[in-house]
Amino acid sequence: MIYNYCFSPKLIRYLLILFFISIAYAAFSDSKTNDLFDDLKLELNKKKVYDHQKEVRIQNLKHTLTNIPLYNFKDQFNLCSKLYDEYKSYQYDSAYVYSAKLQELSLAMHDKPKEDFSKIQIGFILLSSGMFKETFDSMHGINVRNLNDSIKMEYFSILTRAYYDLASYDNDRHYAVNYKEQANKYIDSAIALSRPGSYDNVYLIGFKKFRNGNYDAAIVDFNNLLNQHKLTAHQYAIVTSTLANVYLNTPQKDKCIELLIKATISDIKSSTKETVALFWLAELLYKEGDIKNAYTALQNALADADFYGARQRKVQIGTLLPIVASEKLAFIEREENRFIIFLSLITLLAILVIVTLVILFKQLRKLKAKEKIIDDKNIQLEKINEKLLEGTKIKEDYIGYFFNVISGYILQLERIKRSVDTKLAIKKYDDIQIMADKINIKKERDTLFYTFDHVFIKIFPNFIEEFNSLFNKDDQIWPKEHEVLTTDLRIFALMRMGISDNETVANILEYSEKTIYVYKMRIKARALVHGDSFDHRIMAIKAVDITGKP
Image 1 (cartoon, one colour):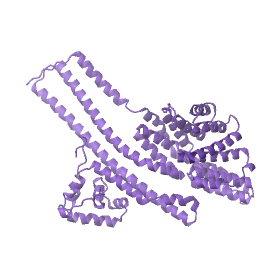
Image 2 (cartoon, rainbow, N blue to C red; image 1 turned 90 degrees about the horizontal axis):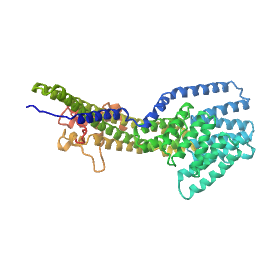
Image 3 (tube, one colour; image 1 turned 180 degrees about the vertical axis):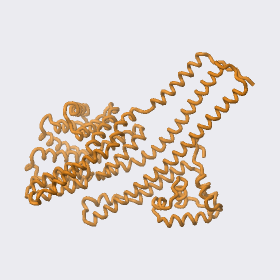
Image 4 (cartoon, rainbow, N blue to C red; image 1 turned 30 degrees about the vertical axis):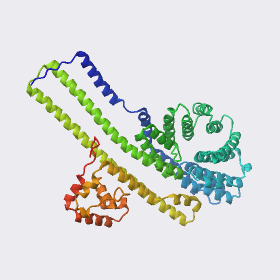
């Protein structure tokens, strides 16, 4: 049978325009955020270079310190102060060591102002680590009148930040108001001690305006700092991240992401690990729906918080990270579906163009030519099917990777807790005990299993039924009403995800390797199929397909 198609020139032009618009959409579909992230990703890859440069400076200072005679307290104090400055925004534990050393040296010199100076330094790192009570304890008893103006200003600035942070943390109509009033008093004292027009003076004035709701005036001050002052990388990061926070409270929220990326790049260049810019960026990207970049930012923010020892920041990140990870998985699935739809559209348009050209320029083909077109279509459909299979494999591999990462995070928490217990043994209660008591490994592991069970069943909705089809009715394993997967089912769920090594499974489920082996052998012994056939049947259980049908 011969078909005669007639396409008008107008229709052909319309199809060609639609075809090229679709190609252009594919080429420029990346968001502006992804473009801005290019520079940041380059700097993230250079973090080790910047950190190595800092470590070299630190090692040189340490070497110099070892050559100073033990009786020369003054030179030791100056070197320890420089080492503290290197560590204070880089690593909490080391900064604390040298601030404590400063205190020891000031006591040996019977120098009360230096002793008070060392307490202020301890207060800064305690606050940076999220330890508010210990910060106030450290600042207690300092005789401000005996300090020079720059140290007084530092003292008042730390208390300003502490009270503003407490007000933001409580965020109520009772305590927060009092904390804010206290912060305003301290910041006024710090402003009075700063040199007019200096970085500290302009920043403190702008910061007070920001925290008291005068956003437009604060924006003017911070832009003045960025445009009229020569700032260090660390100062630049502080100003841009604060300005981003100001814009977040105005209609100009679109400037926040760009400012936070700039702040993060400056933090990377200065090897600053005690930073909130990257965490704020992750939060904002998550709210904007940029899950991919939010996940990348959170992972790096967690690495920085772990390295520095910022307890409060790790809690904040730990709360958001599982949510973003779950959203990222959903994002990947949506992107796969969009890709398939777009590929289908391009394929359809390509077929229409080919058919149109064949009909217009080759006239009516014989039956053999039409059969060839049908064969070409079948080949194209086979390629689409290959893409679908590939997408499914990527999805399965990713879930396995995600679960291993979370498991590794729990093991890391266990190591941290053992380290805390060690420090408790040497009676460092004030520094460690609060953090140690908050660590709940069982809760974290239960959360991990809960997340894994639900995500796994979402991807393999028929797993339990198909698994039990391999056993007699009396030997079948069904979860209880409050369970999603039992331990037995979870072992073979991990196998279906590609995690079959007994040692790895034992580490994830917190059993011994021997126990996992016994579990597997006992279950396989009751199965209707034996040996490798049982494993093949488990691996043959299908995931949900693109249409959502099992």
